[in-house]
Image 1 (tube, rainbow, N blue to C red):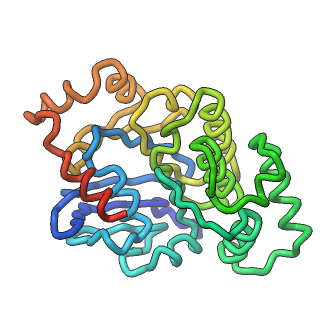
Image 2 (cartoon, one colour; image 1 turned 180 degrees about the vertical axis):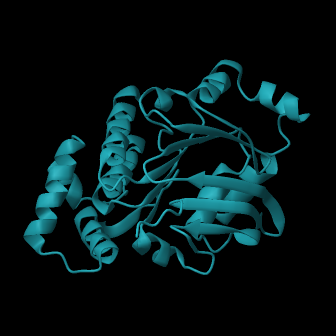
Length: 270
């Protein structure tokens, strides 16, 4: 029997950081094969949501639930979530000196698939994926994110995304700091993943409309002060591009700057 449960379901999620409430009742459903864009002003709680979904221990869920393929993951560690098929692309990827990309990727892929991949099979998959992303093969011998440019860090994240084939991909501002060429390569990589079978669900967190010219979302959401306050199609993202968040915040009776605490607390948590 086919499991009809959403790939990702967030139910009335409330989250605190250092005792301060950041998320105030987030509801979200991402089904298999859907691309959702999540937008919002600085400090609205976007990165808090991403890190909470992946089980960051400094983010405390005080109410609500996170369900992956029908099962609550609140008690799962970040490692358990990743092995099961949840993936997070970080806004600011961390450098790991002394660990090469090839070793990191092989161990992570073994964990994801629950088996020890033969060297030849792993190498073939890695080289084929790097070729698709227009990455030099020497890239795999460098230490993880050490000395990487912003674009190289994001390409490394997309390389992981393509290799691990997650069921749900949470992309936290993958477009941040990219020039036009790097943005196109990253977007092509995401679109290739979106077309893979089985099709994953994708939650694309972004500040900017420009990546949505290259990755077409099925659904767009606006997050303000820890709640999704508006949901629509691609036209909602266009509204944000044309008018910013002022119009939406005015509809809610809010003023800019009220969510700045969320950004500061997220920075402290990470």
